[in-house]
Image 1 (cartoon, one colour):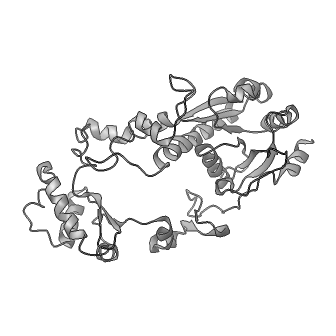
Image 2: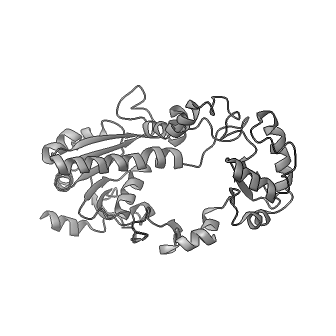
Image 3: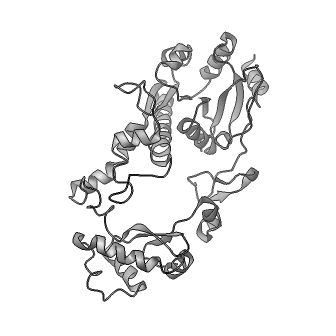
Length: 359
């Protein structure tokens, strides 16, 4: 889908490389500038996040290598970097310098706090960013510390995916006008924007600040339960017809308390009752019982278990290519999954890329 688009990625950590990997999955020619080793020799093995990319090893403190980097950037549609604000400028590779070489360049900047603001130059990590943006607030059950899946809400959701949207939007504009842009992709911005759906629910009065008192974080029918074997089962039967199927499957249709789905005064009590029910049998029992049902119940699977799940297996979502469990490219186009390309090793394509540049 992105054939003909070239992206230069400056080696970094987390969301920047993930965004570049996804662009490579979609067909872009992604050239990652890896660092040279201390001795001047290339180091390290291939990383999953470098799949489908080409690699050149450069020392961005070396004037000759900076010149090579600028030559690459001059021929690119986009650039991705994830340093703190000001670092690329000190290297001589800031937006002004790069746009002087390539006015149509889309310059993608991936940070946690953003390019400006009181915390722009301070350190932080995924959990700090989503805590500040408000995205962490409703995670976990009332009375327990908020906890979300590691890196998914911040680094990937609020960071990498918003960077990708910004890069592709900028490239569309550049191809129409010849004018590039600077994409300021901040995890605090993206993860706050992801709260838009919840804010729409809040607007309707169904979401409040107090945890455990809203439709998505308080009811007995919207949580995960431990099973007899230590596994977990997820339940989220929001709509009345799905909730009715849930009760029917468990033999609770005639229970007067369970019939009162939206009665907040019963949520804690009914949660405890369901805890006892689900704790009586292993996860496999409940998964089999609800299989094929619209009751909105599903087992909580590890990545390895997910790869073997019949639905995930039928769609080919996970693969063990190169002896590494990894997800296949997404999304699909015309029902076809994109090809899974092997990761590059550090400096693997240095000679090839230099030859393309005539260096």
